[in-house]
Length: 222
Image (cartoon, rainbow, N blue to C red; front, side):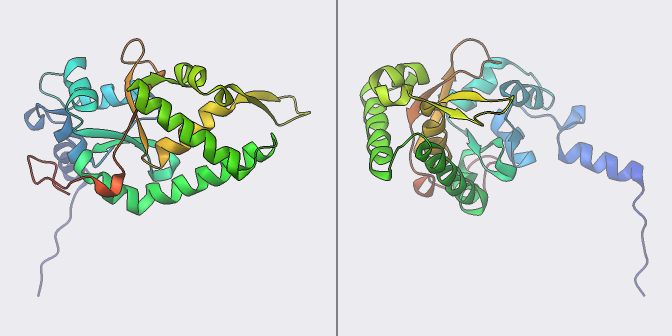
């Protein structure tokens, strides 16, 4: 007969604290090891990534987290689970893309297509503007949304959303188009303008998620 063992709330909390690197003796030195332990760090608010990682790093610094995000690219910010931004270990990107991000990207494209149709855009114009944005980004190497809009004037066009409502607003085409390209993994967010809390990201071309390697190194194996 198998003896039953009760796991108390205190033991459960202790195990979770160790698994999530919250105990002082479990803290790590690299941001990629933090992302690996948690699978992903919530990233809709840019500051959340830094705070989540800092709570689990033995020596937390902005420079260490930016190293992984923008220099070594060992962690990747992507739109995926719950249609929310997360930072995940880069070797895990193809798995996350296949499991959730690809479906999210398809919905983002469908929504953008409907958004642009309201402004009289057809599929041909949408595709042409995407090609122009990617070509401009390849030429510039790295650019913010405003710089891309200067290079591709169609991105500056604005569309009225919720017309006649108290919350009627005008939205720029560029933000929607770039969001779709990022969701599909064709461009990625580079170092933002300003400090680590800034949400004004620069953009660069990115490898397709399906083509990224699965290196077996450190704590980042899938």
